[in-house]
Amino acid sequence: MAPTNVDYSLYLVTDSTAAILGDRDLVEVVQAAVEGGVTLVQYRDKVSDTAVLVSTAKRLHAVTQKHKIPLLINDRVDVALAVGCEGVHIGQDDLDLPSARKLLGRDAIIGVTVSSVEEAQKACKDGADYLGVGTMFATATKRNTKGIIGTAGTKKILQAIADTGRDVRTVSIGGINASTVQRVLFQSSHPKKKLDGVAIVSAVIAARDPKQAAKDLLSLVKSPPPFA
Ligand code: TZP
Ligand code: MG
Image (spheres, rainbow, N blue to C red):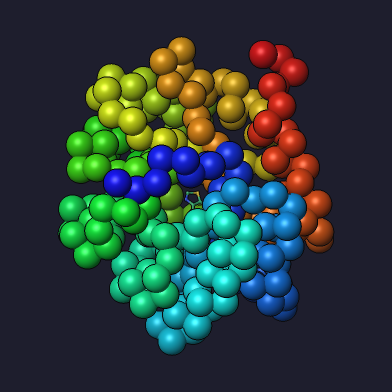
């Protein structure tokens, strides 16, 4: 079984494009964000070749291991295996979940992107540990998303997950920042199933001070919304 005590509150997803990272070193930015309180990291890099993916993932893993938080790799089960990190995040077009589970084993954390009730039901049935539910709001970080589902669509998906009776964690992703995070958590929540956290790219990675940005976001996630 993948560890059940994973804290999904503030899930940092990385981006290596110049538009978001600029000319800064990704590992230094992630280290600052982790010091600010990020609880989980996904190395998502659509631009680097395999050798760079493996070497960067190893450097990131040294950082996350020091802070005792998991590192997951986007898309690439082979890179996760090479690095020996805690798991992967796969989309609907990547290696299927049962195959990823076969390769990584029961102890790995495997997350899946879902945009609809049907995708969520299937991922629950296939044994996902968590679901990245989205896209919440339109975002420049990922333009080819399948659809903007907003808080209403997210709530429907949360209800469907609750109805499966499976203990699957959930994070919302897409356009979430300090101004929207409490609304996302509050308005998406279903009486039987709340979001476990939020996944964020640009509001941390592109921030002038990633450590402070993570700190501010974590305190917003941990404090009840003012309109609750
Ligand atoms: N999947 C759906 S939206 C998204 C991903 C990877 C990007 C979210 O980036 P940001 O900058 O937090 O809006
Ligand atoms: Mg993918």
